[in-house]
Image (cartoon, rainbow, N blue to C red; front, side, top):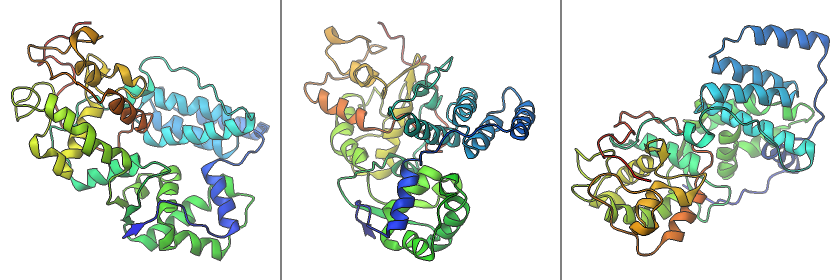
Length: 360
């Protein structure tokens, strides 16, 4: 069933509530009471040094009590221990949105974490794509790569739609601290679960939900970034890298690109996408969302005299004659920071040992 990407107009009450979800309601940072301070101290003492879930739970507790700066410290600690912790990533976004509204500046300075950056650590430690993805994997990538303003209708469904949305309304929306001073009516509920509200439903599930709810969403159409990958980016990769003797075939060095039929096959296309966005060589990403021009994919496709990093091994990709800006624009349109999608993979290492040494 096709749904319009433009969020439908619903009652003023739910629109107001929706606005509170999209951008957190501004409220003063709460003051710690002696009882609360004792509770915080007790909870913090129980967290083990390597307990990412414990720090995330502590951050959620502090957020629920409007102690946003302390919550940010705790969620950053959780991400330092486990950089691909999805719940912690989403909670940090929520905390930072609240702090931005409080400061009125639109900017929040997040403490710099030691070790890997968000970009490098959020990427999977191994290359995706040696195993062909399933449609369940495809749904996950589509779900997380959807933009707020898609250029075409979204097609899809929510599994056990009414039951899932009832549970989300009761367990997530009504218990969210942003709604504690709001009165939600039966009409608000009916408008939320309406089949015509599909786009807002999946946006709120992505923003406020957990894996339990994320896995219920099946997006059946390509997001705009995947349409561009399918029609513009993948053909370049197939022509330059996906050739026999390079990265095509069962024994391809480093990582594998699915060949000639990739552009017309959904599973192969999404597998290629995951491979390119996850693979790293000597701790450098093929696709760098932080600095698109320094993506190894783009560097390897430059004429040799313009390469900051040379392709390892004897075989080099065919240089890109045109379309550089198109590749850069596409990389910039991808979700940042990178997302793990909840997809596990059993793939080749990223060290590049099989491909030789890159020269700088």
